[in-house]
Structure formats: C-alpha cells, structure tokens
Length: 295
Image (cartoon, rainbow, N blue to C red; front, side, top):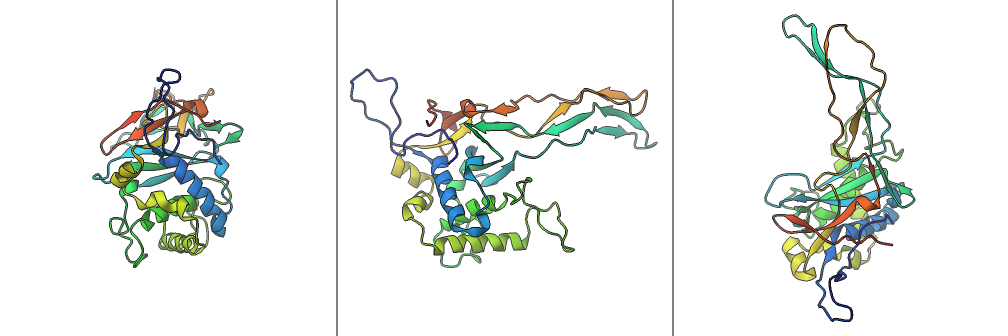
C-alpha cells in the first residue's frame, strides 16, 4: 500500500488534551485512504489492471463543489522523462518575422517519494463533488441499467486506474484507426472497457465493507462518519505538476531578437511524506487538520 497520511475512520488523536483527561474524540473518515484500499482490491480482481503497483500510486483530494461543473477525478502521470530543449516565440502577423522569443527550457516531472517508493502516478478526487456523483448525474444510465446510483463512483475509479499505461510511460494512449499509437486518452472503446471492468469487478463479489463508503453521498458521509477528510499537499490547492527549467546553454536563434525570461517554478519540484497534509472537507470549503503521518 502507498504511504499516506491517515486518520482513523472514527477518531483522531486529541493532542491538546491534558494527560489522563477523558476527551470525546470526533468521528471522521479519511476518504482517500478508503479509495486507496478499494483500488488495491480492484487491481487484484480485474486482470486488465493487474499491471498497476499501488505502492507507486498516490491518491489525494482536491476541493470541488457539487453544484459546480468540473471533473470528478483525474489521473496525473508524473514519471514522464524531461522534454527536449525548446522555446516559445512570437511573430509579426504581417511580415512573419520573429519579434521575440523565450529562453530555451526543458519541461520536467516533479519527484515524489514516499518512504522507499517513487510515485509514478497520482489520482486526485474532487470532494465533495465525487461523493455526490450518481449514475443519472453522470449520464451513465444506458451503461448501468438497474444498477444502484453509487456504481457511477466505482466506474470513475476504474476509469482513472485504466489511464495508467501498462508500459508506465505516462497516460495510456489509445490506438488510432491505422493501429498506431495516438495522443487520444478517451474513445468509445475506452468507455466500454471501463463499463466492462466495473461489472467484472462487481461480479467477483467483493467485500461489501470495501464498497460501503461509496454508497453515501456527502451529506450521508457526514451523518455516518461525522467529518470527511482526505490526504492533500501542504501547498494546497497546488500539487505536484510538470514544470519548466531554463537550460544552462542558451543557443542563439536569431541575433537581435528580444529574449523573454521564462517564469521559474513557484512550487516545489521534490516532494516527500513531509509535504502531505490531512484536510477536512465540507460542502463549501476545506480546512487543514493536525498532520499525522502513518508509520
């Protein structure tokens, strides 16, 4: 399992209590911990996802309101190699001549390391939006007739796992009409595969305790568990992303053309477990909790 920040499903240590004092502990669920455990069960039951090593996948939470449009979840590939040196440039619309350009730069992936494991992929879930997803809201009725509404969330989880490329070279690329690899990451066949894998997983009769948390919407989770938390980064709402780095050797492209500086990375380029946080999510906002890293 990936090293993650955890809080107990039902309680969190009260660090401000006097020694020996009995203090009621608040109930809470760490949603990303539950998602991580469920994903480990899924890849063990669905052969097409068997290439995924969850020790190299980090699940984290982002904020996303349920009443706003946006993604439910996203798969982030952070194991891509550095790009070839390149630059941006601007041309005069009338003459076509280059008027200015940027410095030469390369695009790099951040390094995320948790314990002894290097993270290759991250999967983020937007809370509470993901929790309130249903088959009808996600327009998946034709794929899941007579299924319970929460199955849409399972479909999304498997959808994001399916983006993990078997060769571990970024996001899974789909074959084009001529059989060659393309830059597309979605297709009708991709969605059909996800539906098939979702039904395949359910047919294995997984432990219902592993799925139970998916059956609640966000209000239901708060009623059942008290507080909804998730692993995030200390730089929240920022998280590890590809960044640009100016190259030392700056070849001259066209003498006399003005060179614009490239904006340097504002976020860290290396992350460890010390850069993770736990945040509590509500319908309108999130707040940072006492950090507690799992041993």
